[in-house]
Length: 172
Image 1 (cartoon, rainbow, N blue to C red):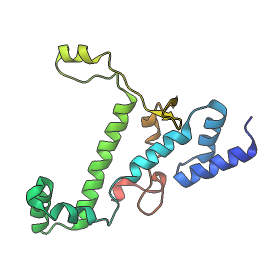
Image 2: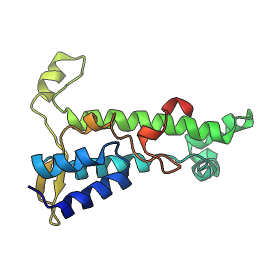
Image 3: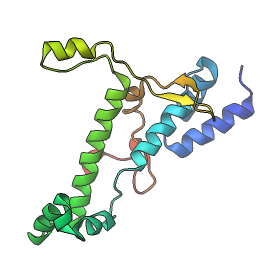
Image 4: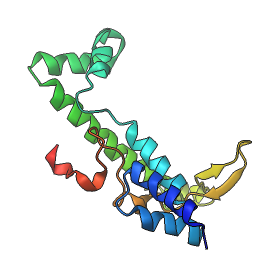
């Protein structure tokens, strides 16, 4: 049985990371040994890296030298047509989120080989990977399996500090 202090500490951390049921996550980690904090923190960091609402610096950076960057040239053409910067930020954030979700599914399921060519698919069958929490020396401690299962529960920090459960994605 975990100590009440450890439980309280974990609940507090899960609350700050924005999960919808911090007590359940803490209990699962302490009683079942599931590395919930590592998985939630990985997702927190991943979603925290998405473009933030109102952050236009990346647009300005890309359009600074459009000839050297095809994305910058495309952005300049889009902006020349009068597109609102906030719409670009929202679009970029949505695209980043879709990519991130796809990557999380890839991390979780290396064995699901989706390739049309049968010979290539057979060659890929023995390839496997996993995400691990590691110690200070880089040695694996525990596998972080099932990250995709947490996507519905925890979707990362939102720009105003609210967690996923407080924000309807259709509002953006």
